[in-house]
Figure (cartoon, rainbow, N blue to C red):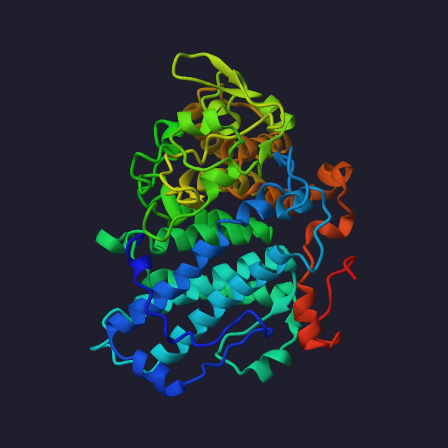
Length: 478
């Protein structure tokens, strides 16, 4: 999948999504129709849908991690990261606008595939059902992120003109989730359980089940969450023996715990900037780890997170590293320069030959996430002893003591905490706080107001629609 991203024959995307609300009408339907002919044409079109994920997910930690209590920004105070950290992000923020555009670009491309493939001859387009399933999953995944970030959003399931787009109202979250669940449920049976060769990295049946289970948890539908996540546990996934191997980028990232990543690769025009962005700004530090360029100082683990780890927890070092400096090859502590952030994470450290060319995948969901979600669903369904069995799988791998004889409430708190320890800086924490209903109580001292469980919708979209009856700003951001 890393390689096929390089060959994005996406001439069918003749429109530009940057100016209009949702610009979903091709400039030339003759060219478009010519492109949608063979199996390879549709394959390239579907790859084009995946490609937008690469653009967006270099920034998702700003929503999922920096917004929450596991991360903060120590040094730079005038960028998207600090605005998210300090709850001062407004509707004219560039990230707010680009995130909206990126996810609607995914939806646009998926809708184009689904519209054109309907009449395709299965004897010619031999992977027709799979392409439909991939496009539906990716459309649903885009909507899932949109609804978690912005709340009510316009539902668009067909290619439409720019005029029609301007007349499309924001739909309530229930309607959006209905489409999300329907799309993923219908996609699931036609997705392979695994891929080989250059197709590794595309969405699988296990990924669909895992994300659907997460969606049910977000909806507090614990019965369906338990059922769907239980299916994932029977598919052959297993936790890696060594937690740190999850973040050892000299190893294959498609291992027994891998379920769905956004794929990146160094030196192939499909890299990301995560390694540089998240690191402290220290030339000696970068040289020691073989990282070209400088650290961006965009994320610093909080002392609250650091203090949660037991000293023998094997996840501690890779998650929150050494406070105030780093350990060199001789085992000596080297302090950071005075103007550098004090804390850092090793989760995205990899040798980088050219600044901004990191190979690190973004882990959308992995089996450790599924195990904890399944434990949560079991516990909420009154199966606390079973939930502890699954929770203890995570604890055992981390080398810390296991739990026994906990009440349902105690188990709920244990799972809540374990998700922090296991999944920090993988984009989950903010959305967990919102799902648990704890965002405001946890973050109000940082500047959060109660309405800030959602982000503002882009002012540029409000302007272009210019109709408050169908497209309004989220509460508190006017």
